[in-house]
Image (cartoon, rainbow, N blue to C red; front, side, top):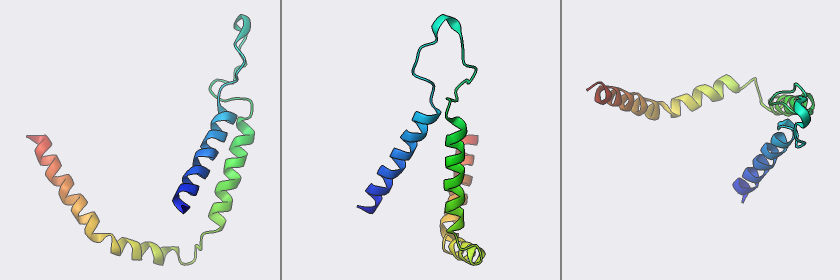
Length: 97
């Protein structure tokens, strides 16, 4: 259920950004444009909101132990990385011929 709630939260956030940044709903009457392009009138507000959310997320990361956790994760993923490199080499040989 946790993954479903996370997906719904991300989908609703994406929809909110789409509504805020999307083009205005009123038609262009007599060719007078707003000059906003693909950004709507709330683009500055939505960019500030997203920047605040990203900064709040960065504040929750324990940056002191980040290099240790990253190196431990890379050590765990060493076999997967080796298989990925081997598969890439095989695919490049197949694509060459």
